[in-house]
Length: 106
Image (cartoon, rainbow, N blue to C red; front, top):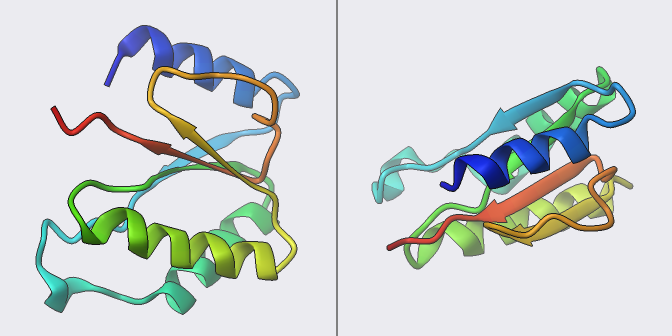
């Protein structure tokens, strides 16, 4: 992860003083460790309800991003605002409840 980018993103997400929490539900490629989108969305929604924004990794590999998309769809269904950024990009919308980022796998 680019350190300069991460500090820019952190500054943009916290510009209004709202705390930021980082989260990831990666399984290291082990499907037996999957918790499931309902639990993950519920956990993230509870965190956001307590006040902070959440920075959520979309994971790597074939399964990671797809699983995160399911969680994000559930969050949107609960009325949360979700924004997706590729690593290195910071722009409008960093005031979303949950901001996801996709790390460069290389």
